[in-house]
Length: 100
Image (tube, rainbow, N blue to C red; front, top):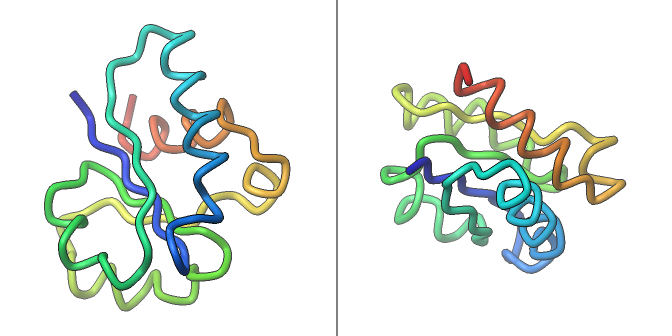
């Protein structure tokens, strides 16, 4: 089962997107775990993640996190997808980056 982690400033702003992503995963019969966390929790959650998606407010951290976790897939969520709270689009982005 894939573990998808979303990171934002406080872990709250992405909660609706996480809910929509879970709905999209269920509709596709795609088994995964999707959760959002604040950037302060990054060191605790990134090591266990298969992919880390960054909210727009923390996308400036992408290069730093990629340097700290070179073995991890880390990418900013597409702005349009994030703005429209497009769970299906965000899940598709995660799966594409994971090579699925």
